[in-house]
Length: 415
Image (cartoon, rainbow, N blue to C red; front, side, top):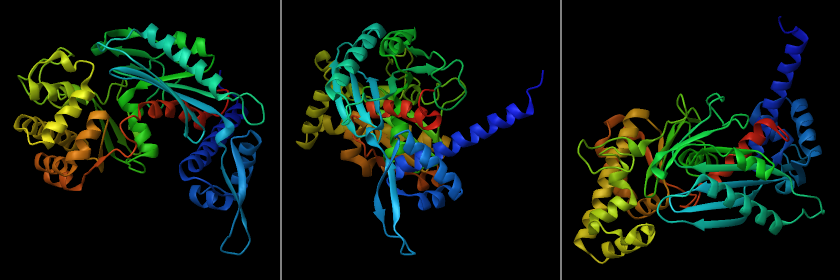
């Protein structure tokens, strides 16, 4: 039976209204306070549409009025902005040696944080679930109620994890909390895992994605890749991953596995990677690989790679030949690996992020840019800009928190 035309029209009007609401909210979140008139000019929405939607956002507490500003015609304009007190959003990330949980207000200002360090590159999903539940409960108790005594509303929690995150029922685009994501992360011992118990424990939505992808979204919204239509963000720690931005949106591939750049190959007979293959990018640019190139195989740095990197850079500055050789080699190999992304995707910008990537970019950005140009085709190599992340090395939890924030922007409360 065909759907009645009146029902289709009603659904269409509702969809358009929701899309317009999301458009306005994105402008307010990323552009800061402004006037209704300026919102209309920036979004090309009619004054009536802007007025109605802003009134709706104010009534639900998402937006507040904040004083007035002068206008070209001399009549003051009332300024509006996102209300930071409207809600709390949580971001949690499972890294190589730690689980971090952070809380943010609606403008993504950090409110509180918890962290747990583990060793051996292994932590069971059940342990992650227990930690995140405990930390969220603890943070909520720490934050307490809002200034007016009412309970703080929670948008949800985003969880960044290693490996491939498959959303069986979702189309390409933002993860859909209606599906149960499946995590495939053999490098940390997770074959086929879900985190369904976490949402039940917390009592609010949990959205899950690969950590490199969540970091890319954070860079695209708030960092070096803001406003970039075609870009790549690479995340380098002990391993390596990438997020690809195309037409201003994160590219996922047919089953969300796009971006496993760390396991692309730049050698036929390199050392064996933890994925089981040989010659992977991460075996040349990951922190453990670089430390091994410097000192040989030495388990002393296992689980303490950041300390080893500190010593490596200190030796480099003291003129130690082996340290200089190891760091010059990583710059060359990273330039080669990035040039493959440049030749393949023709990005406007490549952002180097992650705790080890940040160290490399802070010391060798000029050399890295030269290496990328040297190994890239002339035209895309001349056009691309290689930048260091402006969000710093510890942005993973922020990136994870963009997942529930993005869902809230698109769908509002309670959906």
